[in-house]
Length: 425
Image (spheres, helix red, strand yellow):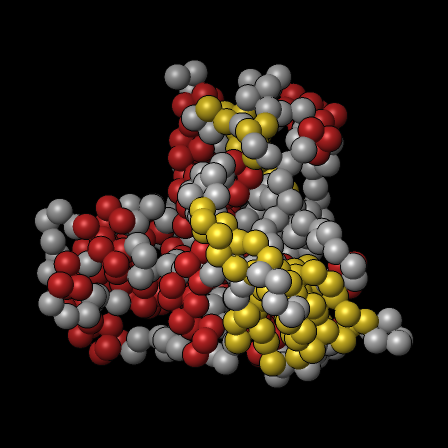
């Protein structure tokens, strides 16, 4: 949808910026990038300096330039919305970070060695952000990643239309240039393992995210495909994916739209089925508009009730119970109940589940405290038996949107808390 800016286009767009003194765009950015500052540097031809300004505040500025809901954040706060179109902040940020990536410049440097060792578990946005910040403070950092490639959801869970693998892996390379050791195919599984590494390292940071998509509870549910795994397979091993012809996606969040978009890239028809109304969708408005323009259909007020199988046991469709609005529930959302109308039947050969991710339970919480299924923290320090274990990212996101930019900010702030701890503050 948005091609990279050419130099003359970036120059023209940067010149439109008013460089507001109070910079509402900067306040709307969760990582508080100096947006007027980096745009001014583009305007003056200092693109390398622009990229450095971005990365100092947001180490994953290249990823966030592609995936942030800018309409809801920086661009939504731009004062030019009142008179004309806002500054294309996301595209300018992409222009600057891509420029430095193509030149392969190491814009940030490791700090003077402190002799302290920190283990970061998880190489997603929260983990890489924490690792980069800690390395710049002079600590030795090792990152563990359970999968074959580092980068977490940036590598495996963001669809190719938004971010290619190469862009995500470049950020992994950037953190390695700071002296960080990245170990793939390495995981932390048990409380006993956490006890061991907490004694071997001066501090441990858990950026482990959440689990797989929860299981469904209706007939044929075992035939549903995990939405995140579907996206990951298409992104990392597309030749191994048997292209579906018609796909139904259960859920109405951003991951559901990403899964449906991926199905469309495979050449399939795609329908999203959701038991509530459009007003209760967790996907951003811009995502919904993008999906409809991309040819994705929506079936609202239909609660998935059964995955239908043919005589060979293969998926042939999905049956949904028609729903209707009946007041509001305890959370203030519109309550839906069965309407009594005939069920809706949608033919398909693949059903994808994108209804969120599994939370933590006592048996997989590493012995740490929990808060409504998330790791419990106080100023990013995990509650429980450990003095030197910290956590951030989706693993602690009890409230608010789970997004890349919020995970990046968590990693940065947690690294500062770890640094204070290591300095005895």
